[in-house]
Amino acid sequence: MERHPCNNKNPKRKRGLWLPHEDEKLYNFITRFGVTSWSSLPKQAGLERCGKSCRLRWMNYLNPELKRGPISQDEEDLIIALHKKFGNRWARIAESLPGRTDNEIKNYYNCRIKRKNFKYNITPNTYKPDEKLVEESDYTLTMAVTQPTCYFFNFQSTGVKEEKVQSNSGSNLNSSATYDMMNYSDIGISNENNEKSCNYIDFQSATQNEILTRSDCKEKIEEVQDVKSLEEYINCLSTLLC
DNA sequence: AAGATGTCCAACCGCCATTGG
DNA sequence: TCCAATGGCGGTTGGACATCT
Image (cartoon, rainbow, N blue to C red; front, side, top):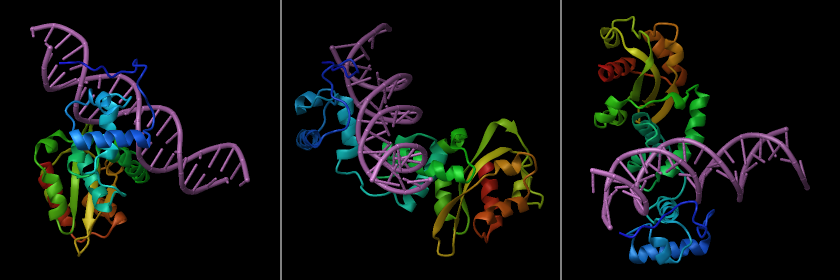
């Protein structure tokens, strides 16, 4: 197999923003011949770029299957939910958003959602995906669309420190006695018309120096939006943690 | 009006798993 | 079996543009 090195030492390699005529060459070549090898494509298409650069330009910009326009609220909700599940595995997240690229989602998350999280006192850098949930189908995501009044996307535990999280009212949460400290939670609440929204609640501050009570929990939630079915929320939480 | 600052995103870099000579 | 090229991925950066002072 012929090798086509693609590295910084190649003096002929062009860099920087793509020019319209380069886009045209790449687009015309791929739509006509397809891609058999990215490494040999630049030469065949008459481009002074490396194969990697061509691949990136096609994947992130020229591919006609890409969706243009701003990311919708539904898409944002999905990104948040999937990020909780998969962490920074952008390519995996992008699989669930047809027409959106991993780069686009990554950029969107880093500059929009991260800022929102900061507003709600969440530090995504501390986030680690819950491997158990990653392995266990789409359970949390399914929850998000099937719970009519209260749903949540994910809970994670941290290995950093242990902290008791209890309910003082005999709920299901209490039956499991002790959990690892819940770090951050995304809780989505839908209204009567099943129009969902996504809000962020920092449970860490609630659990850092105190036992998290049912009323604490309810108070936290009510800070964001009125909740009609706290019991349902507790049940969901208990099911997921057990 | 102009400089400073912030936001956004295209593109590059480096790492790693896979592939195939 | 070894090893270098390749492709894919996530992290990061630089610059264009927008907004603020």
